[in-house]
Image (cartoon, rainbow, N blue to C red):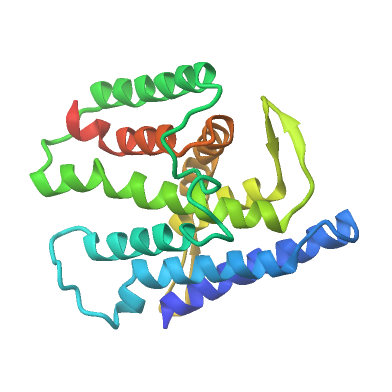
Length: 236
């Protein structure tokens, strides 16, 4: 029940934000059909990550959520393959555009996390933890939040602002906010919890990932950057 309350609240915030933007921006600024598609994608992703809110048994097992992540990733890839969406439009392509600047940004991001790992070393990780952090977070979360969901939200909000060489929409901002809420917001035993610092540390850096995705047209750098950020403290 707590999981349903949590995702229900997040969806209510998304739809409310869409309504506010529609009122402030005027007629034609919001496609509510695509906004509802985006909301449906968020609900499906959450359901798969949680094994339909713990109804489906964990057949894979282990200390990490392999089953939920793999199911959510498979659904994202399958939906992105639909003609109305498309893998390339979702960033699921090897082709890179305007690569010079993004490579510099990704390298600096990686050096930051390597430096933090060297400055604050952790205990050695077990093989499963290392394997999970080097693969699942970046693959599943980037494919969904910076790929499929970003595409749906970009189609939901028509306004654009050109900044740092890419066209930003309200959809880009909302995709980052939803990513932050997925990590920082929850309902437990009927009580709402929200961690502002966690939200800032997830939603904030995701703006960099969105910029990389929009600038290069690909999710490759965001995935590599995400997994390095997660695993750096385990590797160094």
